[in-house]
Amino acid sequence: MAAEIHSRPQTARPILLNKIEGHSDAVNAAVLIPNEEGVITVSEDRTIRVWLKRDSGQYWPSIYHTVSSPCSCMSYHHDSRRIFVGQDNGAVVEFLISEDFNKMSHVKTYPAHQNRVSDMVFSLESEWVVSTGHDKSVSWMCTQSGSMLGRHYFTAWASCLQYDHETQHAFVGDYSGQITLLKLEKQTYSTITTLKGHEGSIATLWWDPVQSLLFSGAADHSVIMWDIGGRKGRTLLLQGHHERVQAVRFLQLTRQLVSCSADGGMAVWNMDTQREEAPQWLDSDSCQKCEQPFFWNIKQMWDTKTLGLRQHHCRKCGKAVCGKCSSKSTTFPIMGFEFPVRVCDACFDTFKEEDRTPLATFHEGKHNIAHMDMDPSRGLMVTCGSDRIVKIWDVQQVVGCSLATGFSSR
Image (cartoon, rainbow, N blue to C red):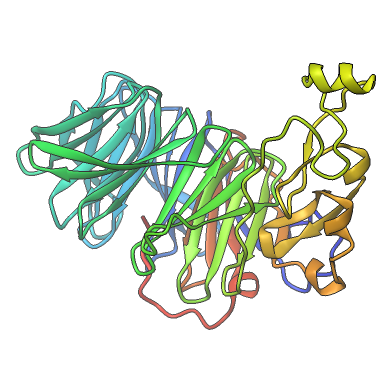
């Protein structure tokens, strides 16, 4: 079982069902096979493995395939049993898995990038494979002809990707902390907008086409929900992790967001509640409460013969304040702050006990989590990471028991 990060009273937590060991290097991706007791993994040790659960209750590899370069990511399409594997050398390799999951046949190799492939999505609707890479590009290739259809370059490594199959829009996160929205066409594309809000590199994205919501996790330990469908630029900041957020998944039926971080932290956020946007931080040369100068305000320091103070910001009102005027801290879950943050004394006095009621639960996966996949219809989650271990979890009690079918692995 998993232990809790925080000491808050909780009745439900993820239950560890199985541990899969045997990789000789980091496992970069693991997906649950829908309707099967199976997991597909790709690893830095250059292997693609299909693990099936045996009568003993243990998982054993029914397919063990080695490729020419370390495997960095994958996209599995269950209905057609096609798997696309990104490699460190920039190639994307397509395989077809047999119905009994005991054989895998090579289909095509796509020269997608000049450097490591960081993420990819296969679209059966358009017969495209869209991928991002450390060559600072996103590319889209035709899976029927194997030819390159288009490519767009960024100023930083393209680190993660989400794709709307119906509208052919791609969301690309990069190492500069930006998310670019592109409209892809055959032989051409257009840049729609750039989303800026994170203070660290984007590590993971999740797109919910039903509500038109985009979720991003980054190295700044935070998750942001972008309301794309609302067209008003509304964003919600969620802060509860202590390390880089490396996986996110939104569960449409229960209106919950699951996020995982590099230190093994697992968070389940209640998104079925009225949340508030965090305010923009205001700029000022002096404290907006007591009017004492900040340390760069040379003129006011000279005029008042006082030493300048360090600038802070109240997380509730956004005002620039000194340490004396913001000596208190508190949680404020409705604004996404699940652990204590600095607030000014005036805002602190307005808080009621119900304002501090948690809107998320936190759990410990007890291993580095680089990738996560879920099957909500069965209440299962799989995590993997640099410790070479794959863990399968029962999360039914955590994310709700009344989960309907209709979800599929990415």
